Amino acid sequence: MLASLQGKEVTINFIDGTCASDGVLDQIDDKYVKYLTQYQTLVIPITSIRTVSIDIKEKQSNRVGFAP
Image (tube, rainbow, N blue to C red; front, side, top):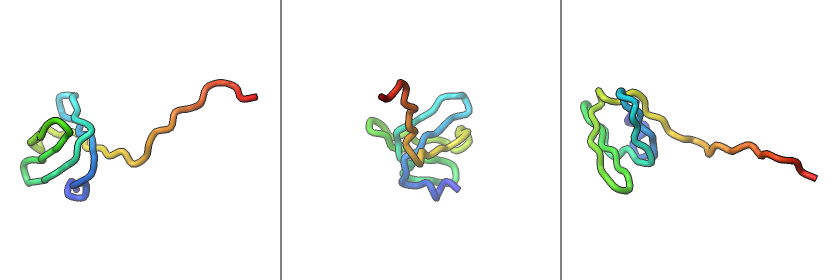
């Protein structure tokens, strides 16, 4: 399942409640995931990952106010 996300920008949510965002899944192994950000390379054990999410569309904010 993770192999289909290789090379895409994703957000990884961990079991302890923290997350890593704005990075790309570089390599995927049976036990580890290599995650590249602009500043660092993370080697993450698969057992510590809760969810992996990918943003497929920009969220548009609602307009507030009145138009003449």
